[in-house]
Image 1 (spheres, chains in turn yellow, orange):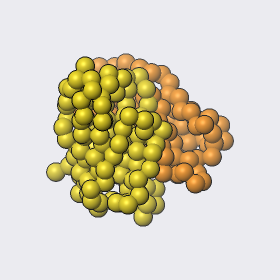
Image 2 (cartoon, chains in turn red, yellow; image 1 turned 90 degrees about the vertical axis):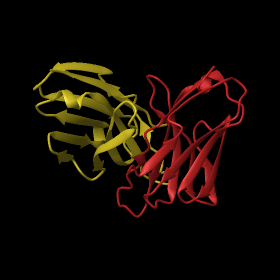
Image 3 (cartoon, chains in turn red, purple; image 1 turned 90 degrees about the horizontal axis):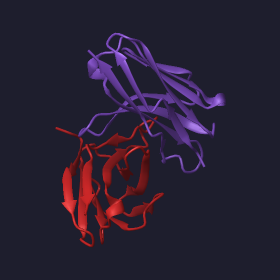
Image 4 (tube, chains in turn green, blue; image 1 turned 30 degrees about the horizontal axis):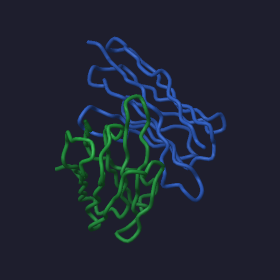
Length: 114
Length: 114
């Protein structure tokens, strides 16, 4: 079973709708991240959380919000989706106790906003 | 601001060929550099991670080198196979305070033809 899972894997929604993307992990990591990837661009950090009570904005947080419901769960919400939020969204986890602190990525959610 | 560039953007080679993917970064104050593989629908998989004090890392047919002073890394793939077809991303992690944050390149799309 995958260590980092994301639901849904694909989603089509309309402009103005609220949508939530969910991420769950079984790695026991405290640190979790949300990234977006646009065609031809590198991944950009949206939000990150170092533990349940610690949530921080990344490079491109406008239009997004997050919730860290538990150590294992980190959700990303688009309160009112717009077409330029069409992208591939990745969740990742890491453990600072691992020397190199590799980030482990989920399979991604492909979101289309019409 | 750290910028990561990957050249070429796309590469097509016949099976069996040895190849080199390039990654350059503008700020040499890095903690480590990581090469990822991205397959459609499967997220990112970490291939090799080189700490700033290291010159290279090897895993099977893959060899990654790092020249921190010149801001360059290469990923060498020996005896390429069709299964190596994927997008390869490099990412750098800065040294210092915000060293949780990865800066990604846009990737090299590799196609290995049978």
